[in-house]
Length: 188
Image (cartoon, rainbow, N blue to C red; front, side, top):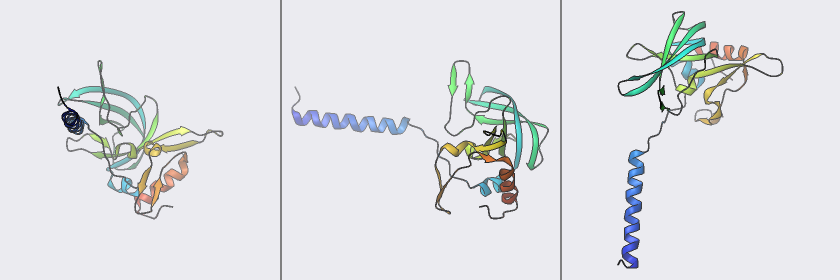
């Protein structure tokens, strides 16, 4: 039978083993905050797109989803009329793989995407949620508005010492910000 001191040491050892297991098993996603200008400058292409379909499949031991888009308006770079964007994660049979920060698209929705070309030649979204801007109809007038996927997260910009979010921005103002960012002009 263990005395009090032995039980205490045993519990501490169990706690330390548990913490070690948690740190080796736990995985998280970290991405650096990109300003709107950084997104515009670092992207290979920027376009307004309409989602046509998504298909998930196994690739090199991971689930990847390719989403097919129709290009409605190209703002930077040269894009084909239809393109596929690949993102990690998806649903294959009963297995669902999800990575925090990776956008998921719905058929028929329209988005502005800030894209880059991966070494394999496929398109990816720069900054994941940060490079995804969903287009929706605003209330009450029904005018188009843009909301950045990362708008729900508080991303601190150390340069401006402010939290930045693009939420319910009228599309005309979004386009103006985009033109300024591409020309590297100051954005209010």
